[in-house]
Image 1 (cartoon, rainbow, N blue to C red):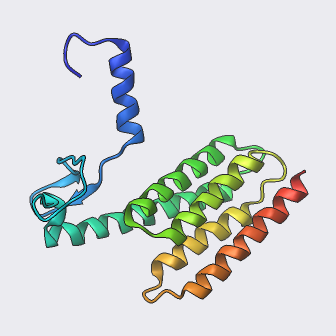
Image 2: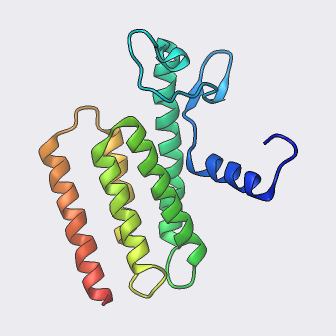
Length: 177
C-alpha cells in the first residue's frame, strides 16, 4: 500500500491477501508465493513463465501435496478436539476444509474438492452443538487422504465414497434436527 494510505486501502489489501492466495512455488533459487501474477489464461504467445518451468511445475505439485498433507493432519486433530465445548477447534476445522477446497480447485481435483465442501457444509450446519460427531469429520479427512494416496484412482469407487459421505452427513443432520 502506497503512502498516503487510508484505513479502507489497508483493509482492502489485507482482504486481498487473505482471500486470493498466490500459488506456492518451490524452485531451486526461490521458495514462496509466486511472484508473477497473471490476468489471462496462458497461450502460445504468452507462456506461464515461472510456473511453466518443468522443475517449478513438478515442485508446485509437491508443494500442493505437502500443503494438503499438513492441512489434513491439522484437520484430523481439530476434528478429534471439536464438539460442543470447543468452538475454536470447529472454526479451525472449517477453515482448513475451505483451504483444502481451494487447493483442490487450483489443482482440478473434483473429488477432493467435493469431500472438502461436504465437510465445510457439515461443520457449518451442525456447528458446535451436541449433534457434532467427530467421526463424520474424521471420515471426510480419511477420504481425502485416501484420494491423495491413491496412484490409480477409480471413478466408480470415488463416486461410492462420495455417496456414502453424503448419506452419513444427511443422517447426522436429520438427527440434529
